[in-house]
Amino acid sequence: MLYDLPLELQRLVGDEIDPRERLLWTGQPRPGRFARQMLPVLLFGIPFFGFAVFWTSMATWGVFSSRTAGHGPPGPFLFFPLFGLPFLLVGAGMLLSPLFMAWAARRTVYAVTDQWAIIFQGGWKTAVRSFRKGDLSQIQRTQFRDGSGDLIFCAEFAPCSRGYGYYGYRGNQIGFIGVDNVKSVEDLIERHILQQE
Image 1 (cartoon, rainbow, N blue to C red):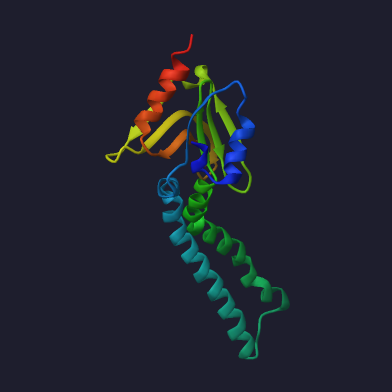
Image 2: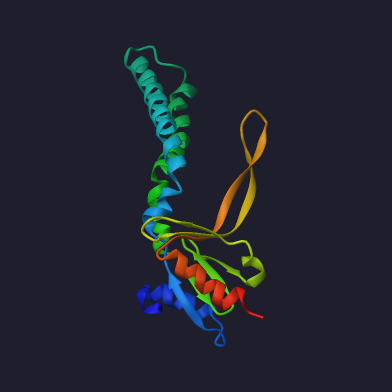
């Protein structure tokens, strides 16, 4: 099971598992399925980045065309185009977010032992989340025609701004996302963790 993983990830899983536990399954998310989570961000990022490019280029063109005409703006306005740079960076981040998620998927591992379901969430750093029997009572499975899918253990809701001073909540589903043979993984959790006395 572990031999399918890169050596660095094998060590990560091995260090987390207690010697008394039995490792039953390990898997990784499909990068494409992981990246698809960022589709709304990508779609919002297209007009956001486009407007940031337009605004910054127009500000730059305005400053330099007026300077070459000999009646340039006062000194502080020379830095006006720089105000667009943060928006360009944010927009570029939105456009690249699916690529980042695909990269994070390759550094993410899911494991099932006879006591825990464990998520090793990769990225710039690794976050480890473990779920015991009591945490797995409300599993929700989403399955696609090819047998892959998601096992959702819980949802976390974080406050976020909806604009105009209104704050709402954004849901973040926690679980095994984009795994192959999702039904067999659910059966494994059911048999070895949920049916424990």
